[in-house]
Image (cartoon, rainbow, N blue to C red):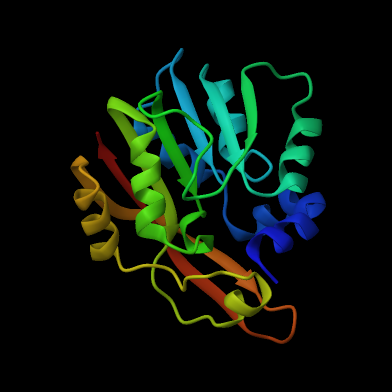
Length: 207
């Protein structure tokens, strides 16, 4: 099963699932690192059902929410049907449906470990940033919980922070920072007693 198929299947229960994985503190830390400002335009890549988008709209930003799962975007539309300032677009990691140099912020929360080519995905996210714009990624540190690959269809078992730093630097970003977010992502296998508690990193850089 592909990641897209998996997320189409779980879209209707994703909000409940997400609450068991990590808290809203991840969103708060992400926005603090970005220094979000009212009136700016942000892209939420791999938006899911709108965990980051909800907070961004509340902060007064316009949001382009991109996901490859039709079901995720449809669930999100229903949830925010009375909320203005959200532009929903279907798109994939290496071909984002956003013009180059058009957004002030790019966010990708727990997205990178689901894409086939993370380095190329970062280059594509940098492409859509304005000069002076900021990319902020939150994702999993490297781990060995194989059940996440089998049950959640993760493509990558987290990442080494030095690799993330290098990819952001190679993409032309400056003032690159990679640090712990102070929270773990927690999951339990549905096929047995195995549990995972994996540290989350936040990485940022300016174009």
